[in-house]
Image (cartoon, rainbow, N blue to C red):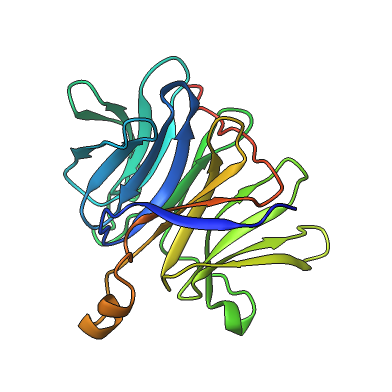
Length: 227
């Protein structure tokens, strides 16, 4: 295995970065900043970043088959048009629960967009803090970002055994995905909300986007929403 390299490729200062998705056709990384109500697109070639601001917390974004994107905004599934920066509701859930919102979302191999609300909390080992966003590699192993743990861990989903730990220079790691030319790079989002001034001085890259290379495995391209 080659040596692992970790670098902050974008100091975005996300309040709570989440839902990284690699868009192969554009050599770009999509991600959201939930409380800032924006979805971002970082071009890995030009290193430029674009933003679309919406009217409610946006918890996930996904590719859409054919053209455009879909996103979970508040309690709505929305079609997102980057060109005119519009978001059109496709479906709304929990209309009677004003304080609820989606917390995350993913597209499955069948092209269905699944999203979870904020009512469920799962826990790993104590030292890992809170398991958050995750992705899978071509060997069928699970990679999990540990919120307040400052790390991404590789797990065997059949045995639950931890196979690898990659520590990052920030505590609030939130999610991860594979990307790059051959999906051998890993991108990790993180948060800075809730950190005191002293912690922010110690972790100036909190809220940024990190790239990890040299993991020795490759990931699976994201599935697009078929609707």
